[in-house]
Length: 316
Image (cartoon, rainbow, N blue to C red):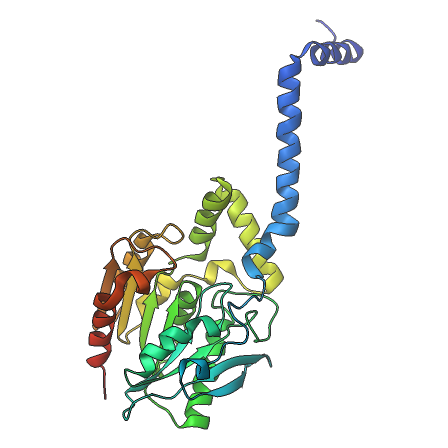
């Protein structure tokens, strides 16, 4: 029986390495270098792209008065002692049909929602544009996509009820704001209605989609690892952020809209959310040709008419 010679095996391995095609060796070296760099980025840098964005409002000096609106600057304290900054803007006509909390998308701020507040004010609605946590002037270091933000909405509702004596309160959110609004609607029956635009059904899916969009990388392992790492830093569970599942527990009236040319968040997520909504009073509007950032602008007066028609049916 032959006896294996360790020295001979080692020598053969060294010869094989020496005889390896230089091109193959280069490819392997580059592959492993990129793999190591990718893992370092996924662990140390990429998570912060998910949970932390620069606080860069479009126009930091902008306020409702520049739109001809009366307003009050408000500060709402959250359950974890953060300060949330916003505007309280009363109806601009001699009638008030309700109050709508306005939530922006990721990286945006309350000032960017003032054109919408202006339109709603002239339709007879009080509006409350708010900086979400970790945005604008509000406190907080990290974005949690609804985990803590839905509790912030509860605090805003508390403020509007106790400080302003308001009851017919609804919520409007777009993109990230839409995901937060759905989770808030699920857990707070004081919110009487919702207006949701172009949001996602599951956080893990949309992070994977953005990874493909930005990096051209189709790896669930990388996107899930990065997201879970981000969630750990921000102290929430990524698996719990599923607005599509929240919809199954929402019975309040909901108006849902999405653009069919949205490359950031697929219209299919919007259709899924709409189908999941438990509400018997719901409406779906798909705006043809609208992308992620221009839903209302692209939809124009036809879109606005549908939204006002929906809200008109809810007037008390």
